[in-house]
Length: 365
Image (cartoon, rainbow, N blue to C red; front, side):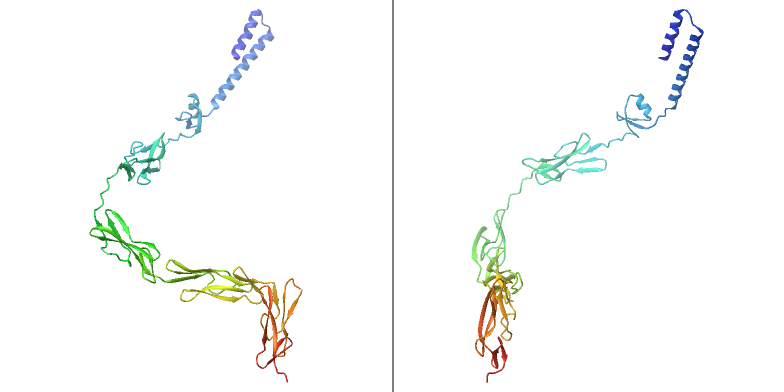
């Protein structure tokens, strides 16, 4: 382009028919500038360095990036293109009748059976490892990673095989025409017993003797079992006691309140039978929902104590109840029962008299 411009300038001057000295100098200067610019371009081109190898957008590896650019191919990255590992299979694709293995790189998978009717088949698809589940279809079954023709089952043996008489104390099985029949409990104390007679299947329902029950198809001696949630008579927890004989529950009770101040506590005896005991909650306690909890009543002498005077009261009530003598030998003792105040009148022991709200040693002369 610079040469074209120079030619136009010079041509214009020649056409004008005369070139002045000043014009001639200008032409010389333009020529010099052109030469300098051309020299600089040549120097820049000589300074360009090519790097490689590179991976081109066409998937090929070029020795340098310059080579790729000259070929009109974009550079994806420096370094050679990675070669994808091929997907290889041994059973030529989806072939359900053949157990095959598919491999790619370090990964390898082999066809396998999910169950007797379903097969997981591996195959290569677009050089990728894929898998799918197939049904083998009717009259076919999955065996060792392949669908094959199902074998005809052997006909069951005819006739009866097993014990020839009933036996309620052991559980037996009888095979009749290929089917199996096993002794079974039809009630808690009745067993259905199978046996063979004249090469035919027979059965009989038999009730177990007294103190026996039916367990797992046979009569067994029953034993008592007892479970107690609080392992005894712990009145501050509500627990359940269950007594069984064999599979039959003959006792099943939760601790319960007799009234506001007494709990019925169920427990297990040493012989694994169940029983109960009625127990007072005691001073300052009441029975709620089968257990003893703190009550609204309080007393200063700790309960029925005839040898110590005390005052009993209920929270929220104005009245107080004080133990007192109502004869020289008899005392009225107030105490808490649940949330209520109750009393007992009793005679002091021999050699004692009632004095100052309590029984003390002494006599009346």
